[in-house]
Image 1 (cartoon, rainbow, N blue to C red):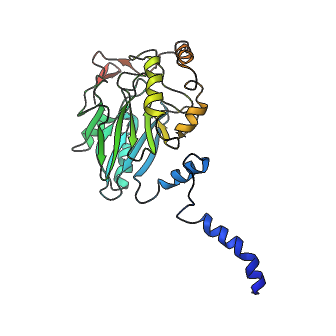
Image 2: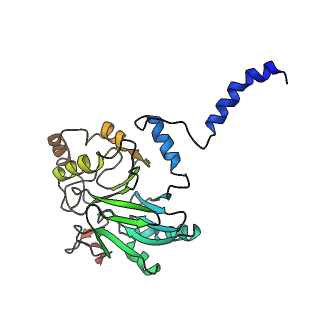
Image 3: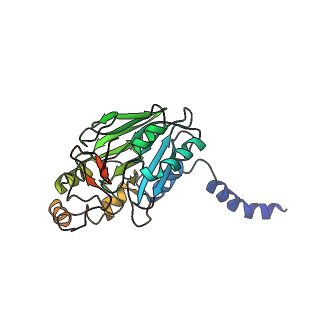
Length: 279
C-alpha cells in the first residue's frame, strides 16, 4: 500500500479507535453525551453489578445490585409473583442476597420480601420506620445499606405515603425513587397518608437536588420507559415542573380508582385476599 494511500486512511483509523476505546473522551457532566457515557460506565469493573427486572401485571420494577468482588447483593422492591425468578438470577450470578429493600408499602402489589426471607437464610428486610410495616431494619434519613464495597443512602421522600424513601448510590449516579418520582409522573396522593404538599417538597428537596446526570429508576412504569435522569424530570415532568399550587390542584383532581389488588390493614401491613402481610 502506498504512503499516499496510508496517509488518506489515517484519519478514519484514528476515529474508529476513539469510538471503540474503553476510556471515552472527557465530557462535561451536564451534557447529553455525559448521560450516555455514565450509563455505559455502569458496566465498568468498579461499578456495582446492576439488573433491572419487571413484573408485568403491576408494571413494577425490581432492582438487583451487587458487589462484583464480595458477591453481596441487595434487592429493591421485590414482588411476590417474581420471587422464584429473582432467586434464580441471584443463584445464576453466584450472589449472596443480604437485604431486601422496599421503597414503601405498595398499594398495587404484594412485596416479595416475606417469601424471600423464608427461602434465603439470614436475609434481612428493610423499610422506612414511618411506613408502619414490620421489618428487620427500620430506616431513617441518612442511613446506609452496604453490600460489599458499595452502599445506598436513604433519603426520606414522603408524600405518596408517609414511609416513602429514595435509595441513592454512593456516587449519586443512581436514585431508586419508588413511587415518589416516576418517569414523567409521580405517585398518587389521595390515600395511604398521601399529601401533594409533602410530595412536591420531597421531590424538589431530596431528588431534584441530586446531580442532573443522576439516573432515576422508579418503582413502576406503564409506558415501557425504563430510566430517566434528574435533568430530564426537572425539564419535562408535566406535574413537577409546575408551581406548588398548580401541582396540588393537579393531584387533587386526578379522580383515580382505588388499586384493585389490596386494601390496607390497620397496622400498615398489606392485605390481599384477607391475609395481612408483613415484611
